[in-house]
Figure 1 (cartoon, rainbow, N blue to C red):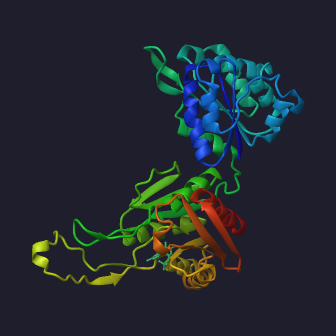
Figure 2: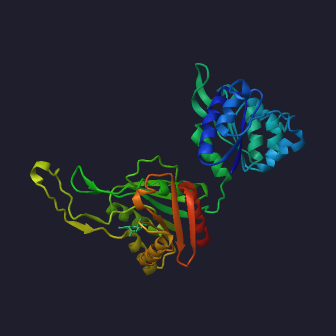
Figure 3: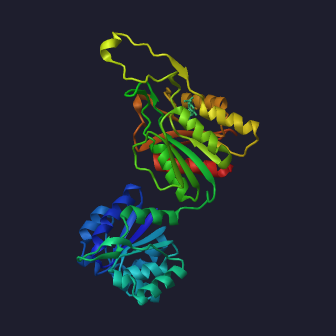
Length: 397
Ligand code: C5P
C-alpha cells in the first residue's frame, strides 16, 4: 500500500522516523512530505534513508508531473504526524499553500492526523473548532497522549505512540469486510506438564495466529484470541484468553463455540499428555538410564468442534491447520486433502515444516484448501498469508 506521511514543524517530528520504520517493515511504500518547518527539526536525508524514497517538499519542482495531484491520487492512506496547531488551522480552512496541504486536498484516500502541541494550544477554542471541523469532514484525528511535554510541564499534547498511530491508520485503510464477524483464533502451542518443571511441547511461536488475529481485527472482526504459551506481543483484539494445556484450550473453545461465527485453529495442540502429571520434580539421580512415560491421547479439539457443529446444526465456519513434512507440493496437497476430510473442517491451511522451516519465522508458505475443492498457494509474510486466509474465510461466510 502507498502511504503518504506528512510531517509538520513540531518537536515530535523526530518521532516520525519510528512511524516510517513500522510502515516500511510491514511492506508499505512510504512517501514522506515534510513541511518547511518540519525540516528545522529533522533532516530530509534521514527521511529519505528510512523511507527509501526521495523527499522534496517543494511544490514548485517537477511541476510537469503535477506533483500534488499525482501524490494525492496514488495514495492509499495519508498520515500527518505530528500535526501542529498551525497545520490544523490551515487544513480546516483549506489553505493549500505548500505541497502537503495541496496533496491533502487532492487525495480521496483516508486521512489520519496525530496532533502534538502544548496542552494550552490543544485546548484553545481555535484548535478545538479546527479539530471539530476536520472530524466533521471525515478526517480521523487522534487525541494526543497525556504526559511529559517539551518543557518541564506535562499534560495532554504528546504525540501518541508510533505503534498506536500506525495501527489506527492501517485500520482506516483496511476493508471492513469482516465487520461484526465473531472470530475465535487459537495461537501458539500447548504444553503438557510432566512434573512441576518439565513439559511436552512444540516449536509453535504463535506468529501466524497472531497475524490472523491482528488482520481480522483491522478488517472489522470481533476477535477472541486464545493463546497457548505465546511470548510474542499480542495485538489489540476484542478479548484474549490465555491457556496452557490442550484440555484448557478445549474447554475455552467449546464454551465459546455457540457465540462465534468462525473458529480458526492455528494453534499446535499436543496430541498426547501424561495421564497424571507428577506432583513433585522427578529427580535425575533416581531415574536410572531409561525413562518411560505413560502418555494418553489428548482430545482432537477441531474434530470435536466439527462433530458438535454438525450435531447441533450450528452455523460456524471452521479453519484447521496442518503442519506436515512433505516431499513436494503434490505430496503436501495430498496430505492436506486427507486432513481436511478427517477433521471435517471447511478450510484447511497446510504448510511444510520439513527441517523446522517456518516455526518462529516471519514468513511462511502455505496451501489453502476448501471443502468445495478450492486450492490456492501463497508464499510471503505471515501477515500477507493471514490476509489471504481471511479472504477465503470472507468468501464462505
Ligand atoms: O492432526 P493435526 O495435529 O495435524 O491437526 C492440526 C489441526 O488440528 C490444527 O488446526 C490444530 O489446531 C488441530 N488440533 C486439535 N486438537 C488436537 C490436535 C490438533 O484441534 N489434539
